[in-house]
Length: 248
Image (cartoon, rainbow, N blue to C red; front, top):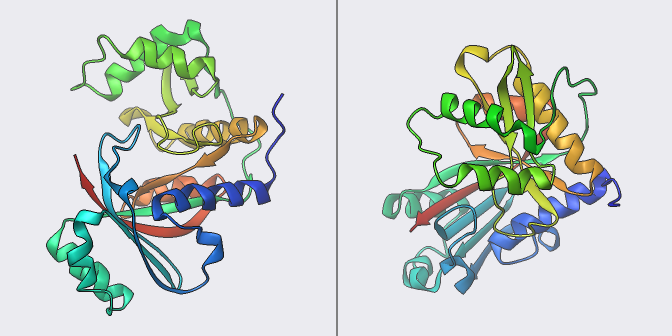
């Protein structure tokens, strides 16, 4: 049986996870600007469906620019710039996605309401939830297998109410350290938002991962205020910013 993760282990694992994108150990760097040319940036990221051919990590006075060899000529031209100038120059040439990276630092929610770990018998409830939450998506041929795989690892958490699921934390595939880190995506039916269901569901998901020796991970688009506030309400804090150029 896996041992419960300590907060120190969670923070260490989170740093190691983001170090995979940077191509260097974040913990060994204190401040300054570092450039890392890596063929890893040309690899299709599992669970993401794209390549991060440029990944700029910024935290306090530290900036790490990790990039594919194909961008080397361009990056060489901006190596004398400061962090803000680098981001501006790269964003002018490529459209960057700005992501808020979070790190778990304290369990602040102890009561989870009706939230619970989903089991295989809950598939009909989950399928109904998925269709309601994603009316334009067609789950035929893949949703059942995805659900069963993740449920077998106890990675799905849901909040049942009125005979249906109103909020669900799923578990997308991880590009790195998949046996040690798990992102917890959260989705809540529009008509059931602002009732605390997402908070209870996400908090239980994080707690269950920690209890089973897995580091919970959270990141979102930097202007997604609702997602950031939800994460902070269950024990995450802001860690850093990533500026990403995605390519198929």
